[in-house]
Length: 344
Image 1 (cartoon, rainbow, N blue to C red):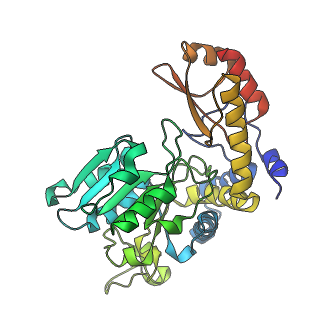
Image 2 (spheres, one colour):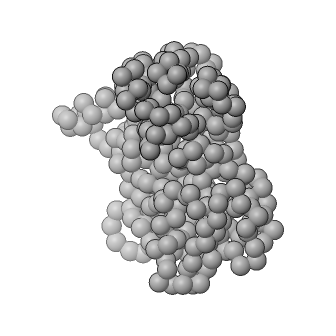
């Protein structure tokens, strides 16, 4: 589907510039979820139909980040997906992360302090240069949520590889608009309710096969079984041989809403979304006298921004006088110009 045709699948109220907080569902996702809710309300169907959305979502996510679906696990939140990786770190392991890192990709490792796991933080711009022989894992966000800064992905991965360190990437603020290959890292986690425009409670993880061999699926239940329908009761342990062994039982209705949104993004192509989103972000930056950038998330200083944006009907994140505006498929030139008029 062409991007222009895809954009007709949203009818947002003007002024939503806050996808970095949560994304808006396209019409097919909204319709699918409403139909499932109606069926649930009256007991019209069984759960197996809803469950098909999990497989569809997994396949679409794998396509978006360039990995086999067999290497993708599903979950509910970024930190939950990362938990088995943190637990698999050896006693006394050393983790390197940006000081600005979002805690979903920090707390799982900090929680291992009782085993001697230590986390060292440095400014994000210094991350690649700070990797050394003592580093066991480098953890960072592909796009920083507060500022929109895009990490030096290739450079940081290369530095980690040169020192034999693992790489764990939180791509929550990148996946859906920024093209990248998850396979360059060892682990990539994404909470899907932002740029993938799924309901909250949907998350994905890519785990490289070599990494999975070190990890224990401690949260395994029936949904992690080699055959889900043969895993309802009793021993022995019979887990899937691929990344599904780290799946948790899905909240089905959320996945019903996720599958159409991810499939639409995969059909349009992330490269086209990148060009559209960043072009709007740069229109916003240039309109405020700032140089253009390479991110769909931008942060600018604007005194009195909260009141001025609210009066204009613009919904963006404002913290300590700094505006974080984020632009996605349903954002428009009119949205940008309305925000500029309010701030200038």
